[in-house]
Amino acid sequence: MGQSKLYLEDHFPSPVKHTWIEFRRNHVSIIGLWIFLFFVAVIVFAPGIAPFSPTEQNTDVILLQPAWDNSGTIVHLFGTDSLGRDVLSRVIHGSRVTFGISILIVLIAMLVGFSLGAFAGMGHGLRASVLNHLLDAIMVIPTLIIAIIIVAIFGTGLTSCMWAITLSMIPKFIHLTRDLVRNACHMEYVTAARLDGASNTRILFDSILPNMIEPLVVNGTFALSVAILELSALGFLNLGAQAPTAELGAMLSDGLEVAYIAPWNIALPGAAILLMLIAVNLVGDGLRTALRNRLQQ
Amino acid sequence: MIAYLLRRLNLFVVTIFVVTLATFALNYLFPGDTLENLSGISSHQTAEYNQIVQYHGFDHNIVYQYGMYLQHLWKGDWGISSSSGNDIVEEIKLVLPATLELSVYAMVLSLFIGIPFGFWAGLRHRRPIDLGILSASVLGYSIPVFWLALLLILFFALQLGWLPMSGRISLLYDIPHYSGFILIDILKSDIPNKQDALSNAIRHMILPTLSIALVTATIVIRITRRSVADVMQSDYIRAALARGLTRPQVFWRHGLRNTLLPILPQLVLQFTTLLTNAMIVEVIFSWPGIGNWLMQAVYVQDFPAIRGGVLAVSIVVIIFTLLMDIVLRVINPLKNRDIHGTI
Image 1: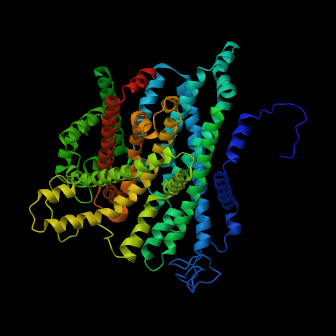
Image 2 (image 1 turned 180 degrees about the horizontal axis):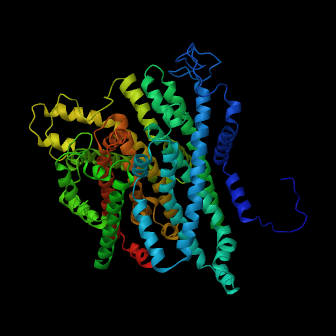
Image 3 (image 1 turned 90 degrees about the horizontal axis):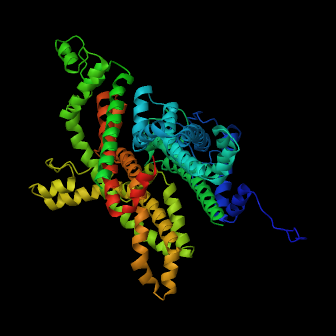
């Protein structure tokens, strides 16, 4: 803060910047953000970082211990699995699949949820009411059940699971958007815009949306943690990614067969999921606190 | 109140209707023959074929078929499982109580862990103890439930050998089926080694219950802590303190009830998550519940069973939500405004 204040001038940061300043004050959240960025880097550069191919089977070294164990080697830092595949490479590629697809899921759910929610929030009467009741009905059904239905119809696979989680997530975003839009509609700045003759679309995008971005992002991070959890859970239950694909949940269920003699095969992928979730949850918590602090001022 | 109940009941009927419609549509959406998906009987050439067609109304239009479907559901005829050939309702009657038992114990345990810790953290807001509990809860909140279950098995069952790793009770005991809740069934039964059976069942129950309860407890802690912190910062608490009441007095007279009210609806929302976790954990511990049963049905593509299981779980969740809504409304009449305020 080398800036000297020459004039008695009040500094008003923009809302987003204000939230960022509040967010930055919490060191734990910043650590979370760094881990988050680390995983983003892993997603982008996975093929470059991983020492081996995730599917390459090296039959000479089956179930090799991790490097920190006495019999481990530095070549296979995290050891190898029952088919002689390098666990580190698989964890890196698995993180890419799990984390990357979860982000995709949240983005799609957010986009669809926002559009439908805006429709329900701006609209009145029967249409909106029917939509709400239908949503309430979908919202109570557990994701696992929706996933089971979709998998039963389309067969197991990553794509089926992706759609299942997206589908179960959309109602939450619709609810959120609808409530935010409906609250914003009573605000004076919206009335002012309406008196100026702005159309509904214009009000939505110019007056309401800028105020909605932060709550949407906060909920997006929480949705991301749910998406990671559910995607890996479905992978673990063999409904999601199938055998050769490196996905963290599927790796866990592969490691189950050798859990007793090679516990690192379930410890390490699980730890990767854990770290990912901690990062996402810390960022989400930090953002939510920052947002609350800003709104309280 | 009556208007409220009617409104709720209306919503309940509509939701159930939507769910039955959806499960009926599943028969058409699932791969394979619709009639086979509906009845679970694969008999195209047999003499019974015409009888089945007639029974399910497949010689009429789709609306009539749906009517027949509803009628059969109501009579308790949900078709037969295409893999085991048993009646689906009978199978669900066996597996659903096991899941509910697990969920109920996990829920009670998580409340017993979560609420005291939540209060402790909330009352010491932004002090070291609060930060400690909060960090532990972030950690717990981030642990995937299936991984936690595996670690518990690895440690307590395989490494130490203290607890059994799968199943519900040792096969040595033959417990007659009565309510489906195994502890109640054992107590009701008149088998010779009642005490041993009871302790055996409890030992089987510890690990699955613990893995679900730990994950749920962290959420309970977060919800409770937030609510307590918010209430303890509010004006009426400060006013009470200013009048010279001691902190315990303020908390017991003004704090407690006001903190519990906002917690309850949020806890109810966690039931779905809890049930999902229970269904996942069942698969790991081979617990004979509906989650395990449904997964087996998915692996062998037993479509009538999938449809029945989905319907059963949905109905349980919907009934639970409805009951809790009414209970909350009785406890907290202020909620009245919500239902009138929104469309």
